[in-house]
Image (cartoon, rainbow, N blue to C red):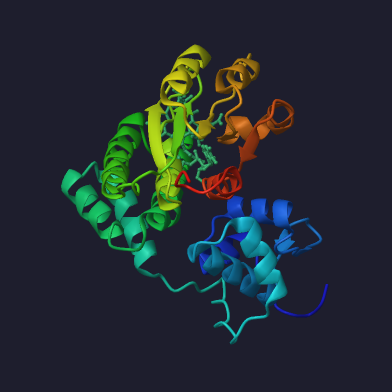
Length: 302
Ligand code: B12
């Protein structure tokens, strides 16, 4: 490895605003970037890798599909040098850090006023999908960790989830789809109670100009099949967090018929091979939906 400064994935995630699952997914799918590996196997990113990621992120924000953004970012050198990454040991806390901390502190204290105030501050910090990705997703993951360590109870988790879900629903209501927008049908698989991830997916669908229709938690294959019959969606997005002993992937493949489908969440990632064999696209992060929808076609029907 060269003597040039290298950064670990968490530092790169903080510097680029992309989460680590997205960084790994872009590397796997588009080879963007291809960081060196340290002796311990950890990814070690160079400043050039970070510049490339920032270019690709900027292109996606400007409306390019991720696959196009990857190609363009790799082909075009930066017009001007981007500011170097902050040293990972001394990250400067920004407004997003402060809001994340405030959300966690309010959750610990079960303080409704403080939680509402922190959620409102979060809503001022950028476009809806970015607020979700940079603030709500890491806070929910941290709440999950603290719950698993016994530092927070289910009441704390419900308390925070309720407020964040309400905020995401409000954001979705504000993102009126354009006239003639095509439908993407969203649902959690059977027995799946983690419906909140679907709200993030719905936000990105709306951002891409599609009309999300969300069925929510615990949607058995037959219920999905009847919704597909009735709504005739142009695409289907499913979410599966918890692994189950006998997942009915085959029944879902039947339920979707010939409608293109994507499935994400931890359980879907673990069953990637089986799902792809059944014709599904497997998404590592909600952003993968944008790429998938771009391949399905324009958000508005011709
Ligand atoms: C809130 C929460 C709950 C709430 C859910 C409320 C709701 N309405 O959603 C409730 C209380 C119901 C719940 C219940 C349980 N939970 Co829970 N929960 C969480 C928590 C804290 C947040 C979940 C969340 O919304 N995350 C934010 C989302 C946006 O992130 P994500 O799920 O990682 O999704 C990302 C990607 O996977 C992807 N993605 C997901 N879906 C899709 C779909 C598409 C199409 C695409 C493209 C991408 C995509 O995009 C997302 C963003 O990038 C997590 C902690 C965590 N790390 O997530 C635990 C967590 C998921 N829960 C866990 C557990 C163990 C449980 C319970 C078994 C607890 C129990 N003993 O009862 C039950 C199981 C219920 C069930 N059968 O489904 C574990 C799961 C561990 C595992 N995989 O085995 C976690 C990780 C907590 C932990 N650290 O242990 N939970």
